[in-house]
Image (cartoon, rainbow over all chains, first blue to last red; front, side):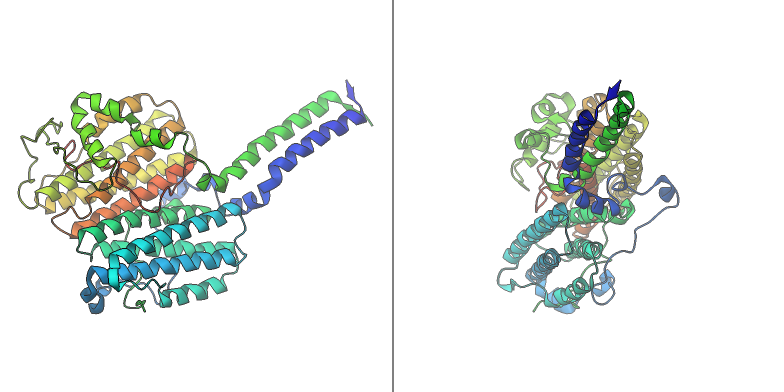
Length: 240
Length: 271
């Protein structure tokens, strides 16, 4: 049987409509695809597992290199107690909020879903800051950590594209999780301990989302244990 | 020019197949992170623990304490509303109802609560190891990436169990090195009913959420404050596991600004 040109045009029109409907978001979807979504969310490959792929060193250095836990017990912060630690955590959260705002405003993050994630995470950090601020009481500053913001801001300004911005956010989330693990070893009162324990997992989950969007192998964003290796040093990033 | 109808049908069909396969997955990639609601309503989701409704958990013989412990943890985060802590038969580890008549070894004294928490934690990790092995052996996991994740997470849970067992010994207790029998009994019907890959992933996700919330609930309950960071060095990872699995299920991987503890297992359950 043969098809007339009129019938063919009708079929092509139908296909074209279906194509346009499906392609409405393909620019965003392909951008995400390049960062290794879908089947890569659960990476690594079997070959990588067999080679024992460990935790990737993809964290962003915030100013000076990260220092071990033993050096984090700055005498000043040991004396400031739980209130001082909570105030420090508040400042870290507010710096994260500003970092996400800057990333969203840069114009380099374009997929709507990624922008929505950034907005949501900024909202979470805002709530975290409020909770830490309440725990800090009169020690709260209600200000982002200036030195941390300066360090991150420099990196954000130098970020060439969306992936670079997301890498900074990824580093921040892992740094926050590490900082709160450190805090759990230093805090003494029940309420701030429980508050910190309710926030650490959320920062970790933020890191999972960002790590998967960036196409990192799972062993990068799902390590065997949380550590304090990437913790933000209160001595090097004091609250103002 | 005219075209063979059969030829057009074949070409259009092939094109449509390619189109339908590729584009929906692409569209879902990021939007599923935040826009896809759970398939269950919030109340239904709240009532399901490890695939077992609260009502059913109460009706399961030996896990009456489990159900009671879960109810105590549900509804108000971090609420210490009292239920009796399950003691365990020292030989079988089976939970007993009512107040414990035989406490596990090393759970007396000031370090007793620490040992109880750590034994419960290692029992949960062993349960996770066994659950992932069941998943791997079931033949239901056919996606390579999900199978890889199952093996990775299982290996990490082994490490977690090792940590908790060594900490138990250090605290003067006897390590609990088998899957938590109370929780296993509670979820066995769910395991037996598994019929597809997404069911396996959902059960794994539930287990990870329970583990994450349980360890969070243990913070500030230790006699030894150093154990707060130790348990959350694991709790954070369980939360990461849960987020990854939630994404596979088209659920929100970061459902709230603060993690809650309404699905936490009370210390001593099953151990």
